[in-house]
Image (cartoon, rainbow, N blue to C red; front, side, top):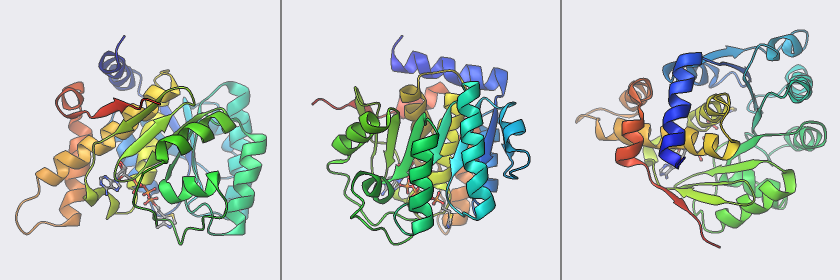
Length: 273
Ligand SMILES: Nc1ncnc2c1ncn2[C@@H]1O[C@H](COP(=O)(O)OP(=O)(O)O)[C@@H](O)[C@H]1O
Ligand SMILES: Cc1ncsc1CCOP(=O)(O)O
């Protein structure tokens, strides 16, 4: 099966099964992530109380952990849910939002890597650079690094180090499982100007993992949906329209997304060593 056939079957499976995607996420973009998952045919649930996360994750087909707005309860819940998901064989996607900015995020990341087996890590270049080399210190939740040169090697090394698939987003995206590495050329700079596109990308990867596909394919499809939908939204903007309209059009593009969009616009290239 080639990539487009695999993607078509994943999209069909998601729309047929409507898998439940459990999120423990931040209060800034939770609504956007829920609507992105819904628009593609999945079923989101946001539940972060430590008293219920282990029960909730048992209903889910994927768990998305997002470090955007941490507190002691959410931190504990992330570890509880991650371990339970591992015990149940449910894929775990980690979005290390703001990694490298504070000690809390650093210590949680270390605990997650120690206690939870991750399926996919998706972050922007600054966050992933910090994971690769802790001397890189980002400023906030947005990437301070714009050039993606070297991203392929970093993704590959981290995927091997943490035994998972690593996805780095930015002007172009890179996905590696440590053996095979791809570059994705879709997207528009509008995507970096509204908050939540990184979190939604991680949620879409979670949704694609829930289709039962290999994590590498799930990350490629999730990021392609975001990049291509961003392009469609940007091209649809009328004179005078700005980022508010872009966001509405982005969700329109999610809800109409089919394999045809990928076949017409997809830009996935395997990176040769
Ligand atoms: N300059 C850019 N050109 C094209 N696409 C971009 C650009 N910056 C970010 N994107 C896209 O926006 C989405 C979110 O990526 P990013 O901004 O890196 O995440 P985060 O919100 O975590 O910082 C991804 O789909 C990425 O490909
Ligand atoms: C602004 C902000 N602050 C804490 S979480 C968050 C949202 C980050 O969303 P994204 O990484 O998708 O831009």
